[in-house]
Length: 149
Image 1 (cartoon, rainbow, N blue to C red):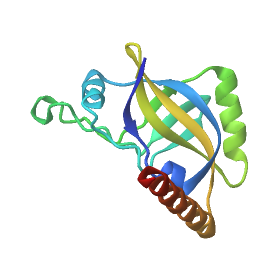
Image 2: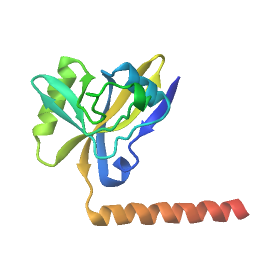
Image 3: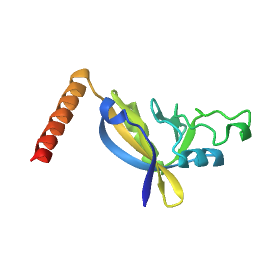
């Protein structure tokens, strides 16, 4: 049973998703509680590979209880991803290619663990985005027509 906790809403619009991975994530207890309350954001977050480890940077997970958190807590800190060595090497090779980026798509529960769906993406051009919006609007109109009948 998987329940989506937070989702990167702009990823599908801004990027063309090439391939996705499932990864564990190293979190503090107060971050887990905050995610289970659906607090947090993946907008603007990306994955970097350094020294044989993968990290999510620029994701925002606020404290569960603001008054009970340590003063040194940083909601935008880098969080380590738990991947196999082969997956990390593959991500590092793909990250080195020009035009490809690694972006977190969503965080979700899988049993008692919190997992992250990470995708290798290529940025969309403006005309690609316009085509997607046009297609979505026409599909919506078609559904309305069938609903009315």
